[in-house]
Length: 387
Image 1 (cartoon, helix red, strand yellow):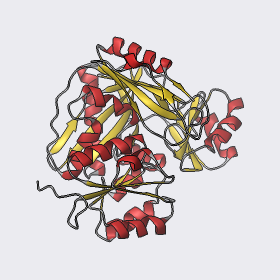
Image 2 (cartoon, helix red, strand yellow):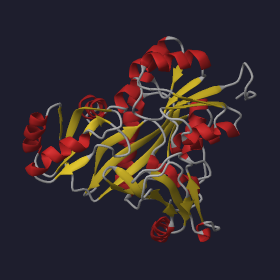
Image 3 (cartoon, one colour):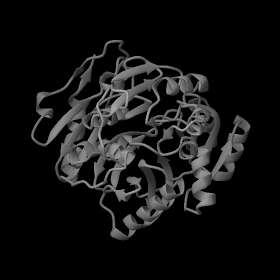
Image 4 (cartoon, helix red, strand yellow):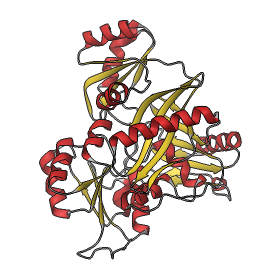
């Protein structure tokens, strides 16, 4: 591959549509290869803005605004990093000759839970939990009665668990309806899912380009209200069950096509693997790869985009704990214990310009045997405070 010089007229450029903590790491990896980075988000000074060559704050659901910026910057690759993006703008950008990662149709299918669930269950015939889609409170009540309780209720388009809840009884339905309005994206339609009493859940990072498909070690995780609290790698599971997950992940990512990393989520119950969701970009649970792999999920994503080989080395097992703000602050500071920074552990602070209760502000990373790493990463998180 030929690498170019940043800020020159022939520079290779990537445009991040979404510039949070995951986009920031993608930007850093791209910069390491001399790739010019344009970071876009809905607010100023988003994490990736801080390390990009240029940054913009626009309404990313405004088709005209997104297309105008694409035409202004003329990026080599467009990387959607959040759900709340004008899909029509991405289709139009492709028509105009721009390269969307992995491709506009894949983004369309995966950024909306309805599209990806129908694609996986009906087009590919993959095993999933039972589900229905609703647009009204009355429809939600009826779907809940058919699916059964408890059931999981999510907006069809959201991220980081926003708007997601579990209705344990019919009495919880109206509260779930109100919670769904908190979605980042589109809460006009909801998915009602059968609750699978799974043994565990995993994320299988699946990387593909023309050189082939590569899998990272399975990542186990604990989520609360749809947002991750703790993740670890590798998840202990049988070779047979892991192979089932790999077969499903390859089937669905081959079906979507394109280049890049996909965070494929599964439920596992009695050795059976159920497809849950898929993100066509780095996954929050995959931040653990910052300490466990020679090439993190972010580096692999950039390599995949550029068409480079997808080889990497595993350093060992590890864990990642999420620190969430305890209060609201327009100029947040984090107090992190010095002993969080050792030979086998460190903290990544995202540099978000504002905090609010529950907003993810940093992660702890520990390289150790899985159980010890999980314990230590949560211990570090418990010692962080914000002001």
